[in-house]
Length: 447
Image 1 (cartoon, rainbow, N blue to C red):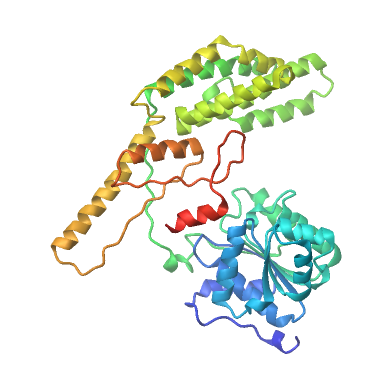
Image 2 (image 1 turned 90 degrees about the horizontal axis):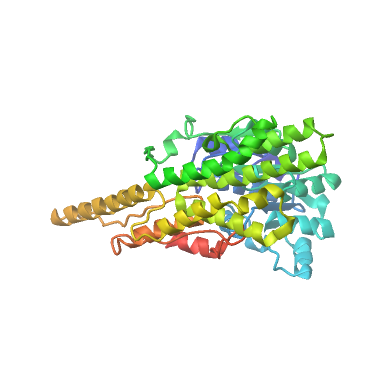
């Protein structure tokens, strides 16, 4: 629209923040990667850019992609609240939407909220009109590396349409430069707008936060298990070191990544080696990498998570039978490994078993938090305060579901003061158990 494109509109129904206005202005005219800490308004920026492209291109299609359906639903609601895009022009497409309904939607609607997999399927089928797409918004854009669906969508669109804008949103652009560069290349980014918690223009809008690091010493049983397990792992590290395929025989300091890098180097330098020797070294690398992971779990999360990972590896090896490497077969027959597993199982059966001292310390911190809150509420009531009493909550983040289960079990011992609830995603690995669906996760978060 030649007239509409002479101006761009920014909402006045939201509090004015200079950084949002400035980023939005840049994103309208450049393919922009916006990196903002969580809670600082990436959604508003996306909604405003989408609204202006809706005005500027009356026949154009606007696409918002998010990696999960709940995130897609959140963005739809936000766009309705922030801008004037009519609901009749928008649609959410999912894998459950019938092909015919999707075809009709692409013909009659203008703003599409979907996951990248749905978008990729519609592009491949020819349902989505490539040439009419004028704006693509990518949420959680740091995922845009390798062959992720985000990358495939952009590649497919670019083959038949050279003129569309991209707005990429993320709270975590990537810890390494090469990761950020991959996102920039895959999503055709020409401008980066990045703000951190130390950026002067967002400091006034940050919630106060204190960070305290508490160091907890290993328990005696963890040290015993670590020493015994390190000896077992050391057998395979020693073989690799003797063959000059690896350089570190100190198991507690070895990571799976270090071993993987060393294996790749060894493969490049020994392409013509005797196949039996190659198989022996490959087997040692495989076992060492598989053992390095449980050992790291033991150090970070304690015995329960270590035991779950180790026994899963043992059971998988037994199921594979004769297909496993000679090194892995040797490990599974090891009396030292069997003895270690028995020791751990016996310890876990003890009534006062705690996987890691961190759990005890964490429990004490949580109890103190709720105790302090109760005392403050009583004080206010005694003094006749008119301030409305507020509930308090605590969120505990941990990486593994075994750790979640143990923390909840410990906190449950302190009901009704502490009402704990686990909050885990659906299992991505074998034997992980059934987690919450994305819809259930949202419901728990709102309680």
